[in-house]
Picture 1 (cartoon, rainbow, N blue to C red):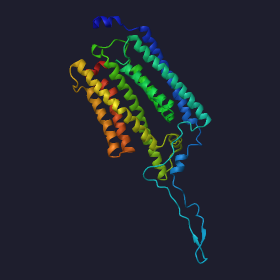
Picture 2 (tube, helix red, strand yellow; picture 1 turned 180 degrees about the vertical axis):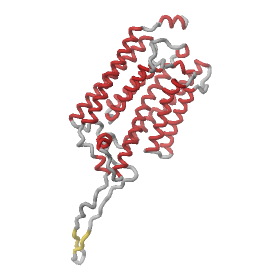
Picture 3 (tube, helix red, strand yellow; picture 1 turned 90 degrees about the vertical axis):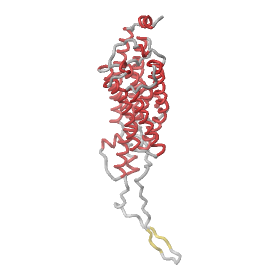
Picture 4 (cartoon, helix red, strand yellow; picture 1 turned 30 degrees about the horizontal axis):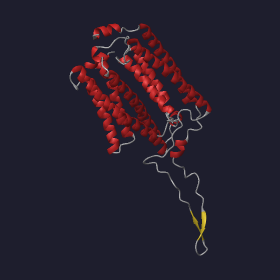
Length: 365
């Protein structure tokens, strides 16, 4: 059976394609409810338990009360007065501050909203996964042959990474609100600007490398996204801790939100560990793409825009990891590098396909 016969025998199943669309829209509706639940978790959770960072970093006011004086007898029986030493906390260098308790601050009301938000996120994830699966079944192929399919699969995997970290008992409750917000934006763009009717692939994509290369690219992007959110929130949390350490008074809204995040040091480690763990798989993704290009186009590397930006992304993350490992870059410098690297990945994801013409243009909009 030749390729033309195979394609004719696998006409898109319109019923399954419609079911996929319904499931994606249903997932968006549930994600919206999860967004409101996360907002309620952040806004109405108890604020009485979110002053630990302030207590750890705010300099003690020693002028309000004079230290007590104690008497000490000398060898000749004469009592001399000693003033106790005032111990102050250093506010430079690494800060030893506790992690925030997530969004809800551990109170009953906040926990209720948090459980509702996670439950709705799980339901939306299942609906979206069903939408991706039925899209694949409608054309009997991998569900990432164009930008629409790539987008719905990407957001599904990103939520799956978040839920996996929750199952592993990681302190990532704070990730729920930015994640759901981003997923709604991603799906909104997918069903409007990027939507493509269910159809068969162009001949160049008929390869088992589609399952290997594109699936690893999607998974890497999802993990890079989570690491990027950690780096971005680190910048806000670090500014908050710095202001407290210098004796400043952040606003009440900033305090109630940023106190619930992990400490700046924890967010820094969180972002680094995710990026470091997924970087080898991104390396494999580029190698797999080169092998596939050799099979499809007769050359392993041709400086196609997608190839170039994949390599630029690799260099950016390699530079980030190298700076941390050799130059000891941590904190704000490392966070800026991580965000620049993720911006490269985002441009490779959206910009190259939308604004640049190349051999990957079949992934179309």
